[in-house]
Image 1 (cartoon, rainbow, N blue to C red):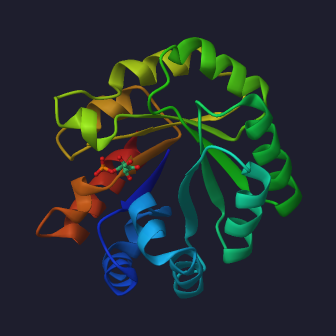
Image 2 (image 1 turned 180 degrees about the horizontal axis):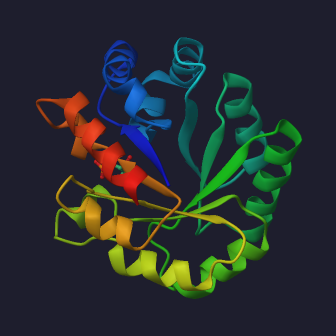
Length: 210
Ligand SMILES: O=C(CO)[C@H](O)[C@H](O)COP(=O)(O)O
């Protein structure tokens, strides 16, 4: 099980400073969608150059022109690139094909997928690397989380790794760990804390002990 730090509400200097603080306690650093919108793929490039030992995920949430966008994110240094589970199968195939060519991984974000079980099975067969259940900010605001969806994909996914994101905090992490996802994605649960390093360290400890 690995820990991914999601950076959403920062600029490049803030992102680099944050990662410096928690670097030894995380496995993957996510350049969040808002950061890519504000700063472009330069944010991915600068993060990878500053922290070559960390995997960098570009949260592009691709919906179309997948091969091209995966290629551009790969060129910027991303190790993992995200596409939406609601995208067409042709787009998913294009993303997987380009990622394989570039030696990169594809993570499918299941945000807004209505039939999680059926779509997870299809995506697994399309050869994606990760399937991630995700409660976005707009549904977190009305009290939702992804724990049940995580159990659902754990039951049906045979090849891909599983991941979970959306509002995970130190006090809810043990419940997530019980479901044994391969990747736990935490944004505000670390970046919103006064002592980010201590929080990341404790999350890492819980994750390593499984
Ligand atoms: O992709 C995202 C929002 O679309 C976030 O990166 C993801 O939800 C993790 O952040 P948080 O733990 O703060 O919810």
